[in-house]
Length: 318
Image (cartoon, rainbow, N blue to C red; front, side, top):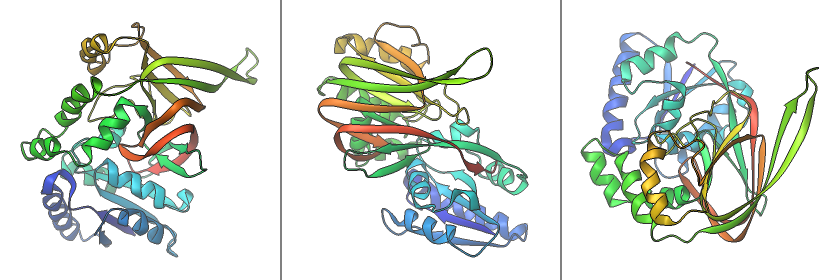
């Protein structure tokens, strides 16, 4: 059975038109389905929990919404092994869809779901706060500039205005520039865990302790882009069993501003001030609470944070 979780608020009202099109196509194709419309923040999580616990051996759970709705759904699913996940993107960022190559075109996105046979199994990230509270993320989790921008973007008048013009992703850029010069930087110690295989194929654990002075941001990426298509770590893949880190630190803010076009163009690897590397898990300890996000959703200000990758978790209908 196909179960749809629909968020009408995505894309400043465009989501309703998208769902009307999906509804029409499903009826035309005589596809049996059930649809649930979100009524409030957090409702998608509740619906995902309800659907994932149904006595159905073939649960195909499809989100009609944006990255925030996807994050709620991921955190509502109680048993990933019972779910086949699908997406019809309607948000302004759509970085989850971008990472999977799912088109914005509604007809094509639905065709991909309906024709999917085996799908693709991807990893899911997890961030753990100092109090032990956990949150899954599909795209990224981060501290610093990108987290502050995500927090501001939730109620941004700029975002709402640009959404109406069909340019919602530009709101991230506008807020990034204004926030960069007003934010305080952090001093952060990060414990990075990874592994490597020797010539005989035997894996060994690697631990690296890194100090970031005047940290502007650190993003742990599951997919390569966040913030409406900014390629934070162009090497990131959603099925490689790794978090791909991108950090900016140790440079004056004016220089960081001049480096933004390089970051936007995905040409920042190897440039002074940027750190790109892969990890299986990270542990952060900062000099003071840092703004933290998961998939663009503000989840608190924390001094101690852990992030890790959960390998081969979610089957996506692509």
